[in-house]
Image 1 (spheres, rainbow, N blue to C red):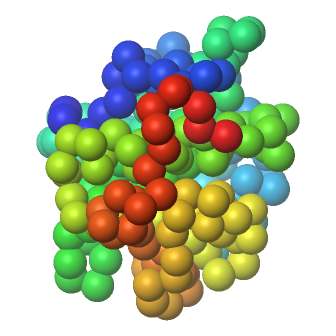
Image 2 (image 1 turned 45 degrees about the vertical axis):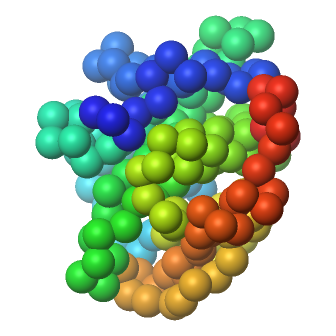
Length: 187
């Protein structure tokens, strides 16, 4: 599970492995219709969607395919979302993706950018890949904004899981030009 950021933190966030006990907090994400608006697919019930999401994360953990980390707000100890490094197959090529999802009540507070930058830095510091991507639906402007703040640019447009997406990318050499002086600030 080399791609997990277990026990890592930023100024406002603690990263840890997902636990089954997180289900009820994360279930709120699946109950809110706004959270699935950027993915075109036939959705199951919120319960089944949440169960499937957890199964996928535990499968990733068991098969060294990266996985989401639970994000805990330091100030309150509350689960605010998930962010992590995910091994993905995009157009027949294995890529390392920075993925992120937050509960809507924590949107527009900089948490997605803070956690995505931490994932980016962790991946490049540990030499996991010479580039990182984020797979973002063409209509998902909030996630696009996070990717841009993370130093990424649109690399290509492709079909991914029956959805037209932008593949945002940052190369390690680009990161070397922008990487922060490490003072634990990721805003």
